[in-house]
Image (cartoon, rainbow, N blue to C red):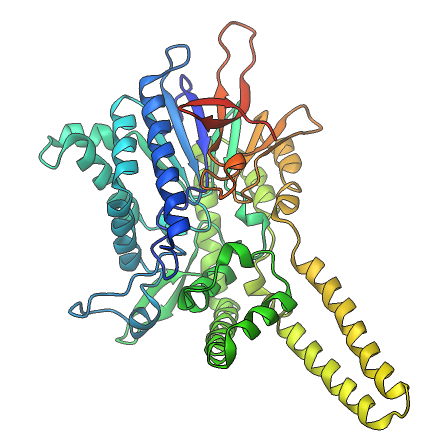
Length: 477
């Protein structure tokens, strides 16, 4: 679907629908937040279904992480066949069939939101879904069809004529990388500039592997964040991934100590499982034959996007090169992300402190071990600062370079959950739409409005907004 140049644009991102469908995700406080999130999103969609600017219809761009496939943990029914052993232990994985089932569960869970979205489309508006890291399963065409069919059913009914269903479906577009309207806007989720969430080959995010029953099967080439959510976070209902995003090594040690002996043993087991699976993933991704095949498909699809958006191929190659290489492709970075470097450092510090305590005499017997532990603390803090680089800072590195490569005054990201606007050197503006689903109400329900020029010689405008008390207002930090 080519962009309709007569439409104003709304951009929202990081809805994370379905995030509560995991152990520990149904706490009372979170469910209260979820009810508010759903109600305000439904009101936002209803408002823009009924309201237009300058009589122009809308293009609603959901800029990544619309559905939180990564967080959803659903165990298969006992009577179902064909599931892998891991699906029964750790919840449905990230394959095509599993992702379809996850999506259907999320739609049923948030049917009010999807119903309002169907009404929005029925009013002549468009929906564009830009794929993010939490909903990379929209890469699968069958998953795309599942969403379209549900929205069609909610809008025109299961018995509607084929022409009516096809016309409705034509207003829904999936963008595997970015959405672009020349001389207006470039919209990308932004996870490619965060090495903990990026994919090595964005347009071919699957890896072929040998199935147990012969033949090959495809599955998403997971980021370290995917592996951490499935094998660690979703197995520990008491673990809050949002809070832990800012934790360093000592924070994890304090939390583990607070779990007691039994809880700490259980935690160590799942941590070990996570490390094992992450290293397995690294080993699979460095396979040269698979690497060559995936690179070829990625570049073939990049050429197709170049023709579709009418952007020179070399420019898309240059934008693609801005990504941060995922930690799953760099063993040293991966071990640091898993705190293996900190475990080894801590073990070394304790060993040295023990030796000094046994060998030294007098005051030195106390000072030596304490100095060793102090040095360990300083090194640990330094490593924490390197590891916990703010995602907003990472994303700010890319818009200036992108603005030089494409014809668009507005460069838009999501992913960081931090709404902001920043002037670029070439006269353009970088926007981050933040997250609709923020726990901090002062930063929740943010979105971007892009309006077309209304008169000859006029310029398009973009404004970061926030949904408040039934209407949009200008966002103020």
